[in-house]
Length: 495
Image (cartoon, rainbow, N blue to C red; front, side, top):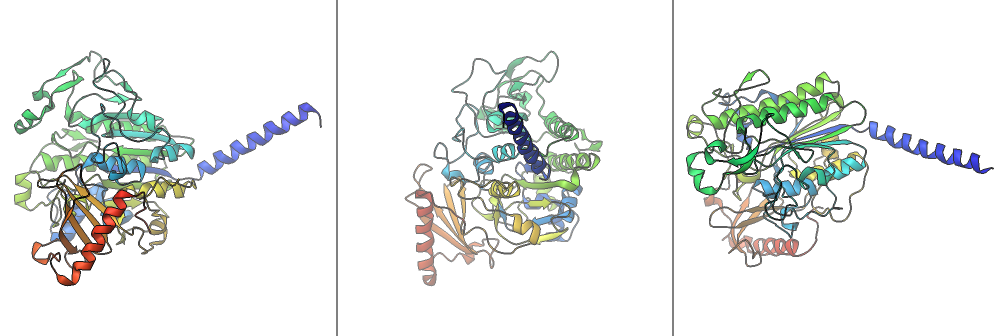
């Protein structure tokens, strides 16, 4: 065989290998993960009606349609009761406490996220599997700025560092500075004459009681938080419409319904502002419209049938609007606690998965899961094994496609910075042990304060607290010890 023939054969084999990889990637489903901000079970119309028997005060027809067309999980949890630690977990598949840099989460782009350049993440898995990858929305996962930068017109951290081909991100959502949209790491001007200026407190549209919380700061001179939903949703729709060849992975982190509650006037032709009893309800309606826009785009482009669409939340709901709550709206859906709480209302959240032809319509799973299980699930879908650094993410495919009822988490771990805390919890089966710490930096000196059997007491009623029952003493000691073991060692929480 002469040298020229050998080179031709090598080139042909390389071509075949690339073609095989491309064809394999084409077989993968598109994946869209929508994570709402501060949405509880009771904020979804379906759950409100299921609990009360009454029509919801805030209809969510698009999310209700997802529920009708897919699988809803009755025992789904956010990795934490607050957004920033949850965002770390959703990206890495590990509980927030494994982020030794900042176990309570990283909000500011001035702070390192604690995730290595080569660490396994959702986006890097998708990228390696041949997906086009995109991020939209609130980042809330730190950055690489070491102190305030001289130039805010670009960011080197955020989504770009994690393997997203395309991104439009708000470093801290609409809730804090910088009030700047970054498109692929570059400042996206809101108007041709936009300038980077100091945004006064009044322009943030926060309620007056936030004035002392240092909310003013650098931003686009045309900053208007009510435009965030329309901008993000329309950008996501445009992205979906432009996907032609490769499968795509979208991680969409809505700004809704975090404060300040600044609903858009309309979205996709639907009236938003003033459509409910208050701005909180209007923001829920806006979130539902965002979901509807993406579903509509998937259907119009013919990609819906080959798309796994997941909807969940970063933590529990708010119960923020007095008029809504007095009228009967309960973001926690009858559970104790809300956002930031160690109780179920702080972390038991909606989780809905739709995958036409793969996931049965209107199906229910009672298996306990966590939002960050999508890391292992994505890994299984694209047939890329996880490394041994991913310790807490379970593969949900058998549940999705076969409605398996086998447990996937040996232990669930919860954490909360609520007043009089911090609080921690470990769940083993139906038993949930709550512990209180002295401060956030010392988790070793923890006191067991509450024990609940959730199957018998999902509301965590204090009169049914089992902590002082003599017959539960060994269980309390065992669960307390196990919690400390899991925190002190790189031990998986899975079966």
